[in-house]
Length: 151
Image (cartoon, rainbow, N blue to C red; front, side):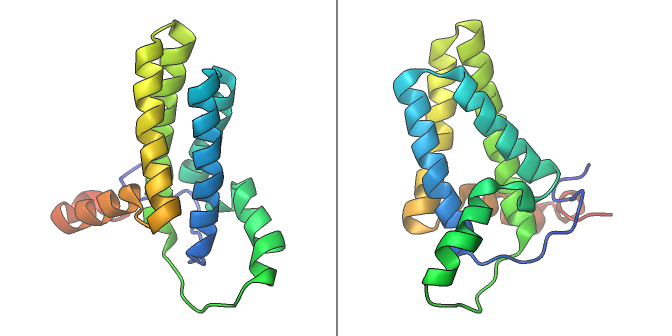
């Protein structure tokens, strides 16, 4: 599948939802680093994969945001396209997958480095709204438009 191509077309989303999810992802990845739990990292890898390759609607933290948080905060008309978010989930998938492989095979340093990279990206998104994967997507679309656009 070309970069940016999607299995399903996700509607634009409230940008506060992905930031909420990034906070939870940050917490999960921090626990992985503290405990070395490859099982927890594998679960996060699966979540990244489902969101990247199937649909953002499969993210349970998005559902928590929509049903528990969003009704309690001021409404916004701001929306964010889903394609960069899905690409970012794919980047998270790669780092989490490499981290999982590292922990499972006993290459703990690899697991720690890959998980730490994913943690930094999640924390940047959560704390200041800088989505590194989204920025990568936009750079790819700008400098390699044939790769970034679905055919």
